[in-house]
Image (cartoon, rainbow, N blue to C red; front, side):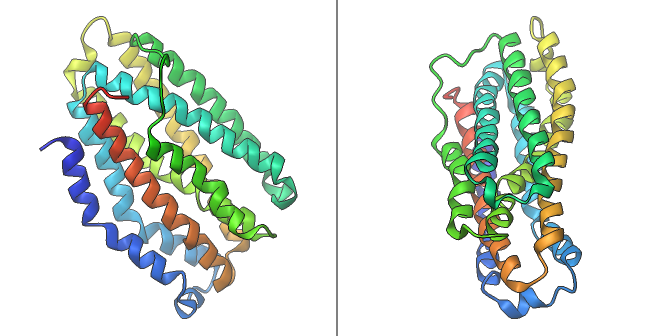
Amino acid sequence: MSVAEKLKTKYEGLRKILEDMERLKADRQFLSQFKSPLEFVDWFKAYVDPLLSLQYEIGAYWIQNADVKNVIAWLRQGVWNEWAANTVITRSVTEYRDLIDTEFMNVLAQQISDECRHYYIRSKVLKMYGGSMEGFQPIKEWVELFDFPLQCAARRKEWPYFQVKLTSTLQVVELTSVYHHRGVHDYFPKNPKLWEPPYREASQLFMETFREIEDDELFHWSIAERVWMKYAKDPETRAEILDCAAGALRASMEARIKRVELAERHAI
C-alpha cells in the first residue's frame, strides 16, 4: 500500500469531525454555550486537533519515503501555492477593502510580504535540486482550495461577516500547514536518500528555510485567532466561522493527500 493510500484510509476515519462541524454550525444552542470568544477558539483548536495530527503524519510519512524526484514534484506545487496564497490576500485587501477591518490591515500586509518571500525561497530550493516550473500545471484540488476563501467569504458580503469568513478559510489552511510542514521538517533528516551528493546543500537549505516558513505560518494562523477574538461573540458569527472552516479543512486534507499521491508518481 502506498503512502497516499495509507493516508486516505486514516482520513476516512476522521471525516466524522467535518460532518459534525457541518451539523454544529446550525446548532445555535451549542454555539451559545461558549462564554467568550477565547473559549470558542480554544474549543475549535481542540476539536480539530485529530485532523491537524493527521496533517503532521502526511508530512512525516511522505518525506521518509521520498526521493529527490518526489521532492522536486512536491516543491513545484509548493511554489505555485505561495503565489496563489499571495493572490488571495492581495485581492481581499484591494477588491474588498471596504469589508476588511483596518485594525488587521497591517497583519494582512505582513502576510503578503511573507508569501512573496516564501515564493522566492521555494523557487531557490527547487532550482538547487535541479527542478524548475517549466510546464507546470497546478493540481486541481489545490486550485479549488485557493478558490475557496473568496467564494466562501462572498456568501456574506457585509461587515464583519466577510472578514470573519475569509480568515476562517485561508488562515485555517495556514494552521494545517504548520502541522504538515513540521512533519516534513522533523523527519527530513531521517531520509538518507535526500542527503546524498550532489543534493546535500539543497537539502540543508530546505531544512533551514522550512523552520522559517513554519514560524510565518503560525503567525498567519494568529490572524484568524485575532479576528475571532474580536468578533466571535455570538452564535451567528461562530456559525459563519464553522461554515468556512469546515470547507477549508476538508479541501486542505484532500489537496495534501493528492499532492503526496502525485509526488510519489513524479506526476506534478
